[in-house]
Length: 321
Length: 207
Image 1: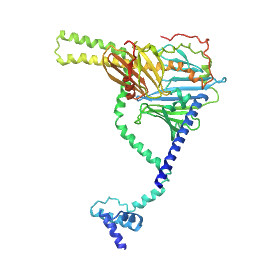
Image 2: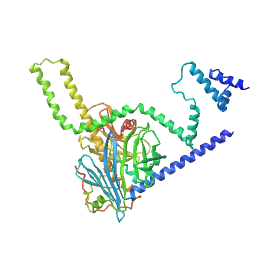
Image 3: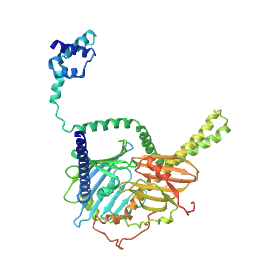
Image 4: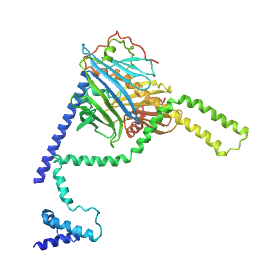
């Protein structure tokens, strides 16, 4: 009887502790998002993947009228800059002439959801507070973002205890292997806008491109029947890949944190063994079955990519391309 | 009585354990523990098993060290940490090779595309060699002629594969950038709402 009471007490104790830890973790994440949105900062960080490091500069600030300004630039190799003035984001890249997009999200190594509504991830992920550590010479709080199922990678964040800023981030497999890391090497807050952002204020951004909203679902010939829970279709269209000029049916899915692209097109070969390569945490999976090439790209394990690819089927009534 | 106790110690040393309690007794009683130690030492000496530097008061030292150890207030956690650490080592061993292969493939992936042009010009020459060499009449092992084209096509297939996968990776990144725009409505909840003003000049996608 006594043991039973003990067990009961322990289990209720644990569940309240677990809930508290989760509560604490989401408070930390909300504080992170607040810092990323409202503070003026100049930072440097490196992205470590495939045994090499890519250095970045990242500036963020809020001007007198409450508009956010942001610059993210890759420091090695050809210029890759992302400039943001409130709701317009411009990309300067070697592949394309500069262009702008109407959005609040900057697409870079740090998931844009971190400066958005992180609590929306709670459908598919658990937040766990892991304890303390020291990163960038500062006391840091470790937060884990763990997938509720086996189909996704996990994230580990190190947040500055003082400012709640991101100090380090890693993408980790369920087996505990680190695939990709972001390590901040410099972090500075200022009262005024950082100098590069003052220059950005007076710079004109390239023209905004018109992004077609994507074709309606009924125009698609293929259907993805399985995705991990929480993934929703963000966009579908029919376009050509810029390198190979291959025309392909395209669907983009997102669970808020991870984006997964599905490409379906006709292939000159009838059958091809599945291929899977990784660039950091981003996997590219491709296979040809009965003359149809299905490719999956995203930060997901190969098993998940394969399951998604295998679930693709022809919509009834649609003609084979 | 005390004689009897020492007997218990002796039998324990000789692995003739009578009762589990006798161990507890020995551990509790400092005199008996000392006796235990001495008996073991005797045994060691008889077996010629003594280290060169004898530390007779090892147990006392360890006890002192344990006393000096800071008290751990959350023993449950430490056990968990140890377990996860162990589990990690085990799991590390298996898939590391896979990742290493994947990582090197990705490294090659970039190389493959960057050197694409160079490789393409290179590949012309060896093919000509194969065609001309029989005319010149150089004695070559038959297998050589066979290997060369298959090697080339393998390499070419590899380059083709890298190009294909690289194209997908690049397009994926590109599509994410453009997609951010289409669900900007979501952000209006967090941010002050913007109106899609017609002042913005709308252009088609750069080609």
